[in-house]
Length: 155
Image (cartoon, rainbow, N blue to C red; front, top):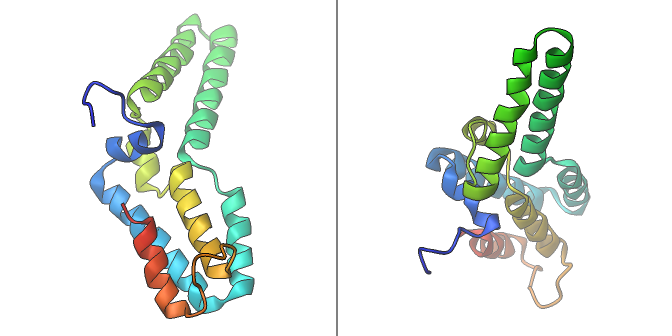
């Protein structure tokens, strides 16, 4: 890959995150998949519904940034004008995240287990394979297919 090209969006958060956090998130995802395979179709349905409600790292960063910006603007308007610096700092962090994939809250959120949309989707599609949604992917032998699915979602 050409080093002058920016990191693809789907990979930039993982590349900017601590490797221990990435590994922990990967193991957690694989554990969810293996557990779902043992529990069966009803649990897979429930887990898929949970994944639909899970906030990815981008949503968490956006909500946090918006909250701090609103707090800064409110305090700047009602308490002291110096609080207007807070939304400016937040905007700089968001710009840094958009360009580099890193910003100060990112390591904390990753340590808390907040995943990227790509990581959530990997689990979602693995569960769908286990459920049998994809005709060309064999899923009759649950033990065998779990190993195949876990192998397929690893980088």
